[in-house]
Length: 174
Image 1 (cartoon, helix red, strand yellow):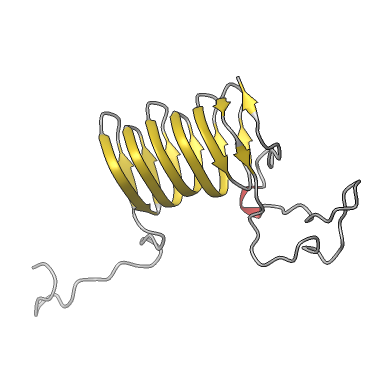
Image 2 (image 1 turned 90 degrees about the vertical axis):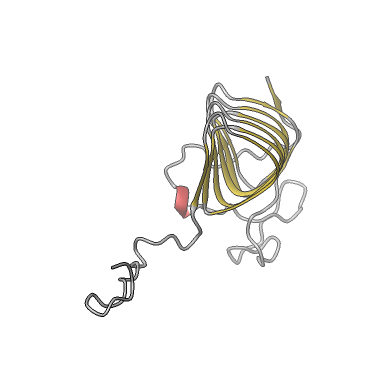
């Protein structure tokens, strides 16, 4: 009946179009409280409270009612709720209008929407690995003091965004 039956044959395999290669979807709904080290692979949506450490290999969505007081490492974060701690983000962090972020952030791209609250320090580093400094597009780029810098990288995955990145370290918005 379920699986290897002589009459029905083996159970059908899931097609690659319906399976999630990046892992499952992790959801902690409003009312949930987690304390400790949380490791997630794939998309993660948090609506409850987390204390401790979060490692998310994929997109981390912090819902409006969520409260995260943790050291967070993620590929990408979209914040609607409250976050406190140290945040290390590989691609981009986006703070929506309802976000309240009290954290030190290391990321190559920072997007802060009007209405968001952000207090903390930001360290921005290039996301491109293996590119020779100052020669990403084959040209030498120099600032007004003659220092080399990389040419801007266009993020083709998010070309709809009106603001590509804020490149201001030690920023404090009230």
